[in-house]
Image 1 (tube, rainbow, N blue to C red):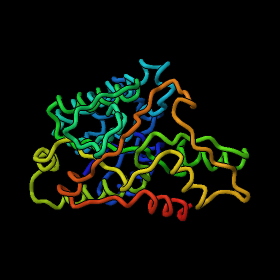
Image 2: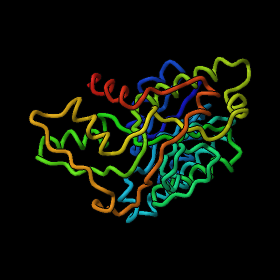
Image 3: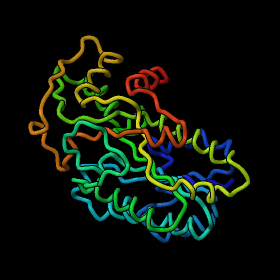
Length: 295
């Protein structure tokens, strides 16, 4: 099977690139090979590779910077997924795409979001990611959209790396405690994706596109449990913090203003993923331990 992977230098794309080889011939691209802000590059690359599966792990993920670069965020997050979907559909290929918890408004609630809840993003990043999701859904392609949250790892930029760095530099860290979500290890996402791909390929004689067509939709894919950014930072410090550790101060969002608004609550239910694919990601605390142990 010919596979085209985008975002090979990102957290999720980097982990996917490590596990995809057994599935077939992989063409892994980053910005240098296929710039997702350039529609012609996207079309030319897909027509040259002629993939049977496109995995779009590429995205504009600078949440705050997107507020001042909405056109670039829109090109990469909102327009490119639609082009990928359109070209995949022409080839009879399937598309796997990663979305975000920032598609939801994040108003405080008692239950995790489910896939049928109405998205209502409150940032440029969230709005452009949702536009990309919608473009895929409307394209007619066979697709799986995996909506994840608070992605972390030891490669690229992530909250985990930032906290470890600041802990060495400062005596006190002030961390927001009134935003709730689920930290999700990028390797857990890649591993779950690989398990799902194996299931789909082993399903029978139909093409992958036909198999995916029967179950096309949005699926939440996060680790288990929930915490605040402060709780996440505390767990990082307990497992890997320096000695002596800096003081961790819990603060409200209003005391840490940022260009982009963040959801106050973005915990996602994984029940649909578990029911459809019998796949469950680890609890976020277990994933964090595994991540740090793998360093």
